[in-house]
Length: 221
Image 1 (tube, helix red, strand yellow):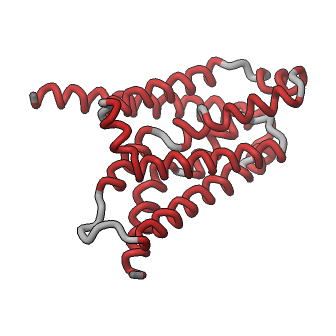
Image 2: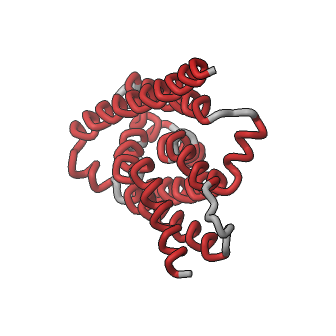
Image 3: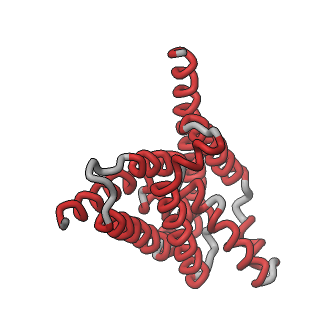
């Protein structure tokens, strides 16, 4: 039983951690909300972690059934996710340096809080933190049930694995402000532009991967 528990945890963490990549996620979040206060950053980190847990759990448990119900293939999921990520990176590249600073000074606190809460799901959780790649792998892992069938120990293992992943996301995002203070104002702006370009490239890469899979599937037919 302990062996099955350990195997479940390791398989899920090893399969999803490189795709979610919490350290890179923290830097991307920093680039998209660079002027958030310590309290706001903690709230964003908590919401991203909770949202990520829910999306990954749904992908592992019912993701394949949902895609099948709507007739959506994994390549199409990659194409759609790639477009969204590329657009987020492009918009960030085109944004003026002082947009967030002006918004923080002009917008009321309630409006700013509501904006950050909305942004914590889209695009910070989906598709930046939990993107098409992570969802696709989670669906694949969810469909690979053990030969003996699912046991309660497997359910517990899934829960522990997701808690480990989401805790790492929370810690990285929560303390990403330390990097902002280390880089300074100019350094943060440079990092924002660099990671905006990285986001754009990731989106294009995911888009191309999905298109390639669709072309290959047409060839095989």
